[in-house]
Image 1: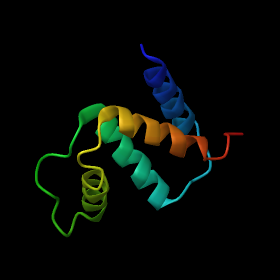
Image 2: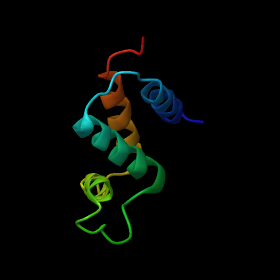
Image 3: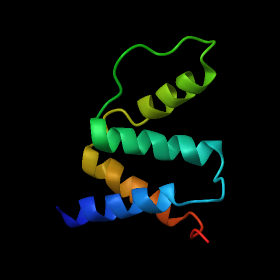
Image 4: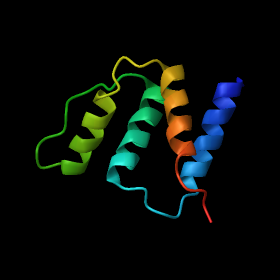
Length: 87
């Protein structure tokens, strides 16, 4: 496992341990970066207008289309480091 992978896994664990809600914008950004880092570019059809949550997630993930896995991992680690430490 590379150093970046280890940092990414630690950041994922830290985010999952959060008790405070960082807000929807931050959660969507974390979601998009995680999906881009682990699966690559978004695929499939954009959810319909009645699926508000699915549509927001799809749009967030689509916003990082083309970003490499390593870039997404670095951005995720950086964003996770800005969250308050879990109590």
